[in-house]
Image (cartoon, rainbow, N blue to C red):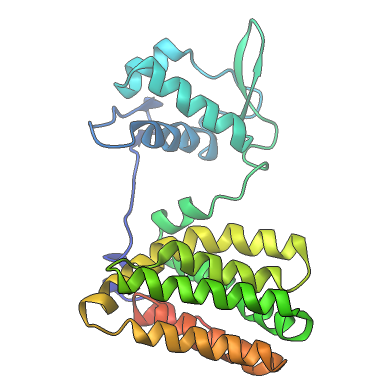
Amino acid sequence: MLSDNLTNCIYITSMLIDSETNVITPISRRPLLSVAATDALRAKIESAAWVPGARVPTEKDLSAQLNVSRATVREALTRLKHEGYIYSVQGKGAFVADQPGMNSFRVDQLLSENPIDSAHIFELRSLIEQNCAALAAERRTAADLREMKRAMKKIAGEQKNGGLGLEADIAFHRSIANATGNPILARFADFVGKHTREYLQVVRLSALKSAHRLDDIEREHGDIIDAIELRKPEAARKAVSRHLANGAPHPDLARVVI
C-alpha cells in the first residue's frame, strides 16, 4: 500500500461530471485550459456517458458547458482525435470511436491521476531501463560508448553552470536504449522514459541540488557506463536499479524497483 505522503507528490487533476444530469461541470480558469477540457471530454467517453458511435455535442454547446472558448474546445477535440477517442465525418460532426483511446498510451495521464498508477509506471520504466542496460552491455559498440560518455559530460557541464542537466540526462538514458540495437525497444523506452523522467528527475535533481549532492548522480551514471563498457549485463542491470531507486522522489516508489 502506498503511503498518503506519496499522494502529496503527485499532482491530481479532476474533472467533475454530474452523472444524473449528464452535464459537464464548468472548468475554473487556470493554465492549460485545453488540457482540462480534453480531460473532461475524455471522461465522458471513458465513463460511457458518450457511447461508441454517439455524436459529440457541437463546439458551441461544449463551449457553453465547459465555460471555455470555442478555440479551446476545438483544440481539445483535436487532441481526442489524435488519441483515437473520436473521429470526424465531414458535414456531420464528430463521433465517439468504436474502440475509444486505442490509438494512444498516455503515460502522462497515469502519472497525474493516481499515485498507485504512478508506481506502476515507475515499475514499467524500471523493467525497461534495466533490460536496456543489460542488452547494451552485450551489444554496445565503441560509438555507443562515446555517446553515453558525451551525454554524461554534458550533464556535468550543465550542473556546473547551475542547471539540473535534465535534457542531458534524458539523452544519457536514450543512448543506453539505442545501444541495444533494437530500434523498437529504444523508441518505447524513450516514450515511457521521457514522461516519467521529467517528472521524477525534476523532483530528485532539485532536492539533490539543494543538498549539494549532484555528484551522486554522476557516480551512478559512471557505474552504469562501466558495467556496459566491461560487457557485464547483470552489473549493468543492478547499476540501473540502484540509480532508479535512488532517483525515486518517495520511498514507496523506490520499493517497486526490482
